[in-house]
Image (cartoon, rainbow, N blue to C red):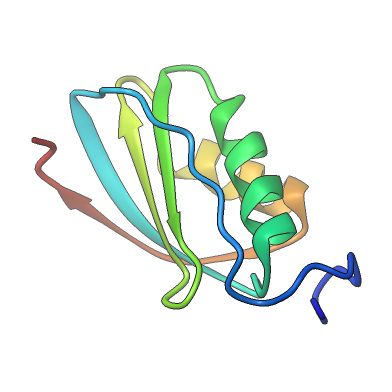
Length: 95
């Protein structure tokens, strides 16, 4: 059972939104433990202007955000709105 949000979802469940972007940043988000956590983070980040794709790897906490025109500060605010903590960010080349 999820201990972060007590939703009852089993660890290891995942959800992803898929689209094509031109830039990508990989963020580390701490505190996610289940599919509900992944969904909450994905939904909030997806609301940020310019974001076209959000991919979450639950075991590592890595969140890849693609699109154009968004800032690390906007992503941090979205993660915090979902109830989690943004630990790190690093740019990667999108394919």
